[in-house]
Image (cartoon, rainbow, N blue to C red; front, side, top):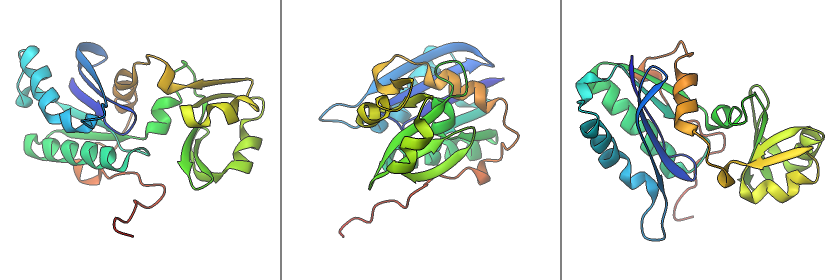
Length: 204
């Protein structure tokens, strides 16, 4: 099965083309001050397919991160995935960024990401939602925790080990691909953004 997996929800764009779990092509794009990484999603997909000698019609599945993360990135991921899967009449799978990050150390670790407003997104074998930071401190105590740069100092005070995914070179889209292959729901019509907190209202 040829799978196109991509993620623009986190701090970089990750795009991988694979045959089942065997990586054919992969690319990572970081944001710059001038350009936000999700702006390169479609052009990079086109380039990866061309370099692999494939066309969109050669794909069997689209796998994408559905959030939480950047609101713009979530919309980019889910929109592109839905349009591609609909036009190609192929499978589409959405995976939470929290589940992806829980596996970067090879296990199924606690994930705590900054959700602002004195809350954090928490994943502990399932999504616990946006949790107050005082409660997060209790959950993280004595645990191995995957977090982000903004939460790292706080989590370090409680966890036996805290790792920021932003400070490592983790194969996030490869992990996304592996998780997608285990999912039963593959209907593109059911692929939706995961907004744990409501998107910001612009102009207010």
